[in-house]
Image 1: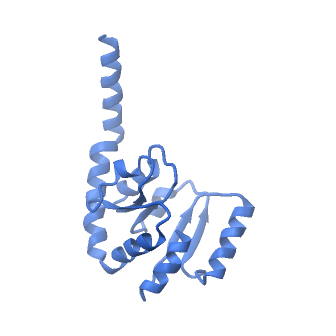
Image 2 (image 1 turned 45 degrees about the vertical axis):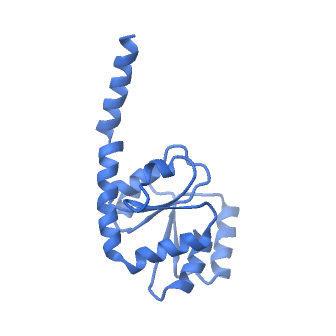
Length: 164
């Protein structure tokens, strides 16, 4: 995401901010901070560290990024969607099963920084796309991944097992 932001900075004159929420080791954070400084992105990237109020933070964001090389379920992707955020994700793990490309977000190939930067630019240049895809994302998440839906599915599975 950081390297894609360097490319994005060359694609747009509009301001943008990448927010990184979560903790990591001191050495890794130092490495990332040095990379950000070397790319001249200090004004474009904010580290939040570990937070227990992530949903409050997400309410002020526009688009989620899910760039994990191996994302088993995609809980974070669904959290983005529940907060009316379209998601740009990579074509790995469960991400392409959750994101409906061109409906509630976009899918790009892992490590394709040019494609990622262009998708980020697409949202920056088309704020109405954020709103429409964000609405679609919310509807998709509620319909398919809500607590009620998951509870019903688990209950149905137990019933099937008991009825065998």
